[in-house]
Image (cartoon, rainbow, N blue to C red; front, side):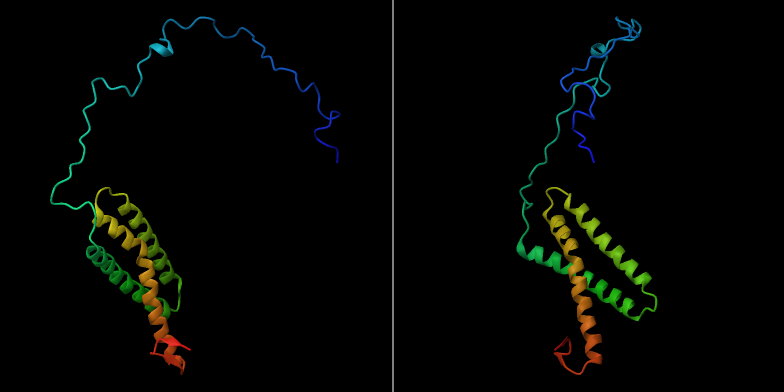
Amino acid sequence: MPDSMSPDILTGEWTQPHLPTFTGEFPAHPDPVQPLVAERQPLDAPSEPLPAQAHSEVVPGTYQYLKRRTFVVVVAGAWIVAAACGLGLYYWWFHALDKTAPVFVVLIFLIVCGVGSLLTAMVNSKPLVSALAIALMSSPLAAVGAAAVLHGVYFCDRVSRCLVGLIPY
């Protein structure tokens, strides 16, 4: 196979400058009916001065942070709901003959948790909503934990050796 950069294949000189050919088809002076670009008014220019933006005020009774116990309560509440969803979805999946619908609902659950957490994380200056965003993002973990407990119960029903009735050994 010949080298594509060899002088036998390339035509012309490498340092030859490109000179455009002007044919004279364009007018040398602008159209008097249409204003020049510099004279046009921008489309997004306001006709009057913009009002000053109102800055958010810090009210003395509100916190700019979240207390630990409030964070724990919010996350625990979301995890309890997610654990119930995980138990229900695993129970439905385990007893269903056709696994398509339960798996689709699990996918919808994961999408709702992810999108909901991303949307709530975009709220500014609301620490309680930020805690809810963290709880929603980690709620599939709680759902999987509850489903794992139910799976351990189902599995230990069939196996003779289990620790505390949940963990096979």
